[in-house]
Length: 73
Image (tube, rainbow, N blue to C red):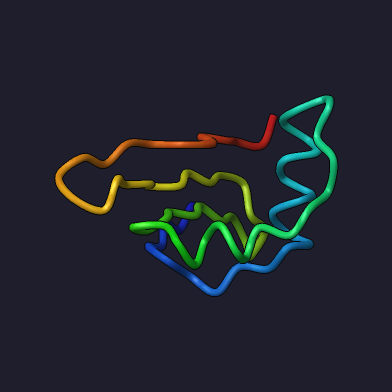
């Protein structure tokens, strides 16, 4: 069963594994500084394994947009 959560406690290991699976040229990095500045983010898990992610960024005022929509392939 797929579980969707808004702003869950997600670590760099899980995010880097997902991005490496989805984006061939992904270089592991620290996601936490970006996530701390986000309006929010959504993670999808199946049996506790991260299978989807999207970052909701914003301009600090009226506009929000989606960044890094990523799903397990």
